Amino acid sequence: MAAEKPVEVCVKAAVGDPDSLGDCPFSQRVLLTLEEKKIPYDIKLLDVNSKPDWFLEISPEGKVPVLKLDDGKWVPDSDVITQILEEKYPNPSLVTPPEYSSVGSKIFSSFIKFLKSKDANDGSEQALLDELHALDEHLKQHGPYVNGENVSAVDLSLAPKLYHLVIVLGHFKGWKVPENLTYVHAYIKLLFNRESFVKTKPAKEEHVIAGWAPKVTA
Image (cartoon, rainbow, N blue to C red; front, side):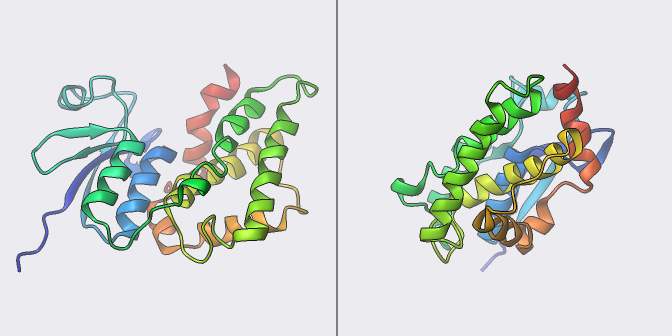
């Protein structure tokens, strides 16, 4: 049987280092899915500050990630891409049960709001803490992953976002996930140590910080 042709995927290159894997959590989500499903792939690194014409032709909005389908069509959006990969490569299954699919879904937006906040009393820190507490409670009952023993799509979506949260809030706000959220801490350690995560995370933590700096100073 002929070896399967690698899937082509365009992802963000690092800020100031166009030859290194960048800091886009949505790009990493797609790469994590490819890794977990053992799908061969070819990465095209995109300097998002200097997008080539060929890329704007396949992604007019200039967004990454984009994945090339068998018919030569390029598809954007990590939600759509991961769904396509699940349907085309059903084994191993990464399907998250519908009742768990929204677990942790507000953590990223809460993190961004708190990160950009200039007012310590605006409630943004508490909102993030509430979301992390909810995740901790879920993991306490159902862990170690969101759907129990096996990693699933919701974990692969959360992992890069939690990585950004830890690095960026630590750097810009000197903030850490509270120690009493023991299940969240165990979950983070579990995710960050997975082989797929180690292979697809940004080359350097500095790249993550550089990627967020304009949003913090805006």
